Image 1: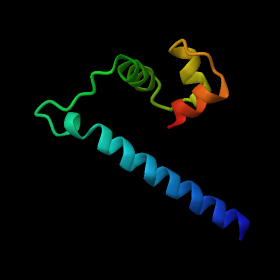
Image 2 (image 1 turned 90 degrees about the horizontal axis):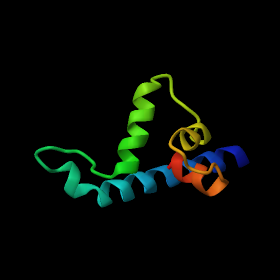
Image 3 (image 1 turned 60 degrees about the horizontal axis):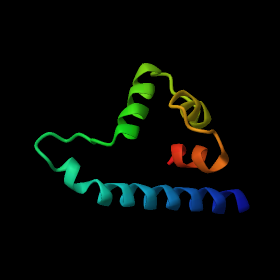
Length: 78
């Protein structure tokens, strides 16, 4: 029962994150050319595109030159 509640909370957090990101990027995703101009975002996309099997958030941080502290790793996960 505890595990189910934890999973429900995580799913709710993911839904909130998705909604927040969609709201923040609404202008960019509704443009004729929907691209995200943020250099760090483009850098992360390039890293993930080069590794189609996926990567751990900590490895993404290391690859893009970000200190893999828990704060940054959690940000990379988001």
